[in-house]
Length: 312
Picture 1 (cartoon, rainbow, N blue to C red):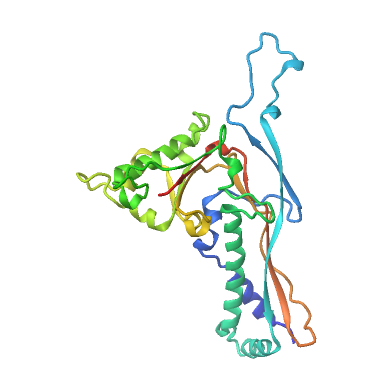
Picture 2 (spheres, one colour; picture 1 turned 180 degrees about the vertical axis):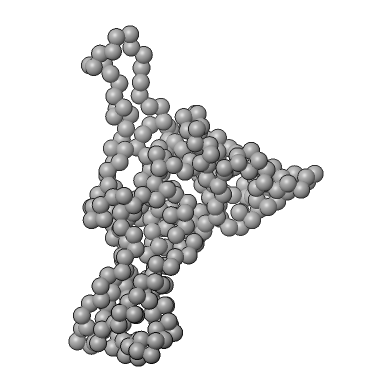
């Protein structure tokens, strides 16, 4: 017994009906799907913030300061994230019966398995983008190699809250805004990325996102969020569990600030989620299908445009 065509179409429809929270990394970071779906590696360069140039009275090719001298060449492997659907003989019989009666949408097992496979694949992609994977040497946005001299900034935010706390719940709206402003300033690369101010993105956990509704000061009704938007009209603020301590493996929550531009960084996914063809029934009459997507994770070209504030 095989899957009826209308069942396959229903599985595909469910698989490709994506919810915002499932693809948070694709919403937060620029998405690059232009690569070869079968590529095994992605090559890219990491640039120093300073660049490379000098004044010369008479340009001589032997003394030219080539841009490549200020780059670090890197190669990222493209990995397949996979999940699977399994249809036993009993399930196939139930599906076939519903399909012949025109009630395929009422078969809950189709919906549940397709949703489960989709969520599993996208959750793994989110983990790779933010936390990375040590086993496969995939760097996430919090990887230590992106931070340090000439690169991004990773630090504990100012202990200006009640009782010298760093937590936003213990800070006034103005102090929260100061934490965010510092992150925005430090992602400017000493002015190199100042023309990307309209592309600043701030990512915080949901609880801290709600704290942006605090009054900016006790004497005004204007919230922290509205004040920030008045100063940075194109500022984007997103919330995600991917920056919370339960996700990062750290003991504190993070604030991530960066300039959202493909020149700075991008999520490289040469093959989006794809439903494989059903296998032939095995000796027990079970049919299987693969659900895959291929990704190299996050490609960071300019770490100097990154800021991580710990302890919010």
